Length: 213
Image (cartoon, rainbow, N blue to C red):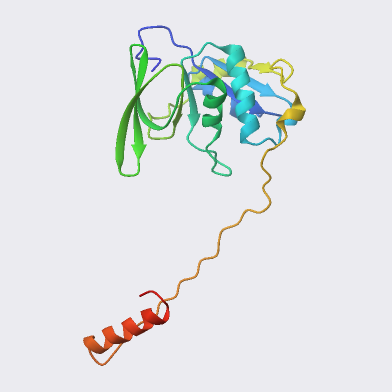
């Protein structure tokens, strides 16, 4: 989008957490991003998706205006996907999920969504939250110049106080008590008979016994 746009485009990366590993978190800078903003606080170590959405929305308000907000389609830990929707709800802007192609059309954005049985094309005004995954574009490799530039660039850091957020308000709304893979068992009963007619009669009797017919 940045390379194909006729107007100036700035790409800003945002993340929320504590004790970031700079060699990892700076990778988007070496891949072409313009700026990195980190909201860092000890109270952000063990927050849930609701709190993540609140903090990111506050950071976006502080650093706006913005046109496109890209989020991953789901989390890599518990596979949840409600943070993007939470950001859109808080900011009161549209949210379109599963984008595989994006095209800017004057004051709107045209988005091709991935569905289980095909694709869907929708248009929406900006600003907008869009969730994406590997269907959209290809990840560029960091260049040597980008790596050297990223090593010299310090990310901008924000505290919760700068966002006017009380850490006590970020207590998890959801408590994960137990995470497990459900046990699945399968039973197969073969119905046989002297011939097809006898096998069919025996099958009907067995289904009647199980109250299936």
